Length: 87
Image 1: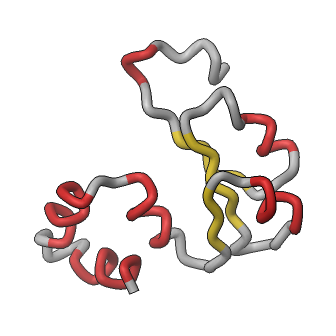
Image 2: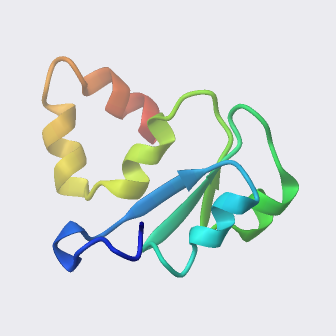
């Protein structure tokens, strides 16, 4: 399914916590390992990027540009979330 996505749907970031999720590397533009529920050593070691917090906030600076983060931070509803992901 990932290979079938048209170029107009790129970049593709895949977030996963399992060893089988690692198989998406090479098909997606970025694989981010997630250990916030269960930490798996192989995922942590082999993921292009990795984080292990309960919050998904650390994903924001991985997938957004600085300009996008700044726009989001300026929104009253999301400002606190952006501050937390940067700390």
